[in-house]
Length: 346
Image (cartoon, rainbow, N blue to C red; front, side):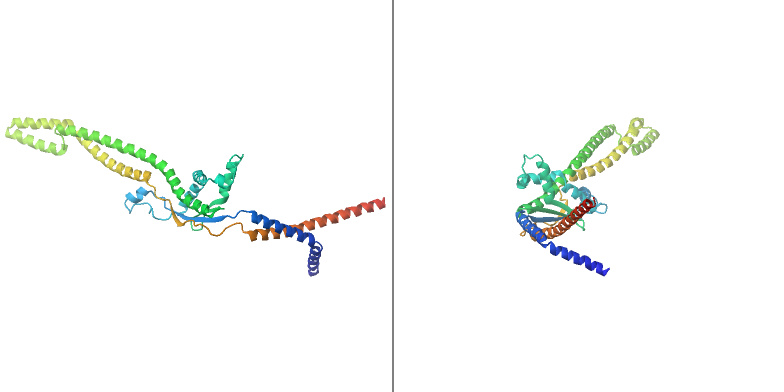
């Protein structure tokens, strides 16, 4: 077993020794080409922003609701759900469009706008140079590569600024619809209560304002007037009792309904105030842990790595190429010998 392994190693060494010239030439040429390519590739600078999502708790509920019943503290960091929401917003077409327009990326990336696939090429370049990823601590890292270190930092910081405006816009569309619904309900309730109060005022004008107490007092006074022989007073009290009998139940029903609707109006008013806060608030949806800084040192290309990787790859490729060519040559020789032997036998 050991002798076989030694034989194979010896064979490889002999093979490499015999083929060292083409292998070295190929490797050397690859090294030269990789050096030239690495020098031609434009240098790019890297800038990164690290943000944490804020809690998406309703601002109105957090600020207007009793703290003991408030669902979440708006000052808390968000959790996985909030991180996923921010990731979706960061990948939105609106943020891409704003950044592309502000920095004229079609021109900056040297893409021909008249080209057949210019937009596709632009979006691919954008995705290659601008990326978002979640960290293990549920934060989000926004990374931008650019040939201009100032632009790289500016784009990274602007994305975080635009993030809030896009997020608020998405929420505001829904919040304004909710505000319109609750506002209509609130004003309708106020009108209805006004109508109830008008009806109650009319009944009070007729002398009906506390059915049970009035009925008790009028009945007692009417009885005393009859007992004392004061017929005029008795008739006056009887007229009042007749009015109570006619309108008393209506007054009670309206009074109870009015009380119920006042409670409903109070609830609607609270919801209306909350809806207004939610519709017009513009609180940030993230905490900036590390804003982007202008990089002083290029991030890529790593020229030595390109050269080393290309040279090693070329060296391995050259060995395999020599092996293939050597095997092909052996097969060819064998075929020629077989053909010659066949001819002699014939």
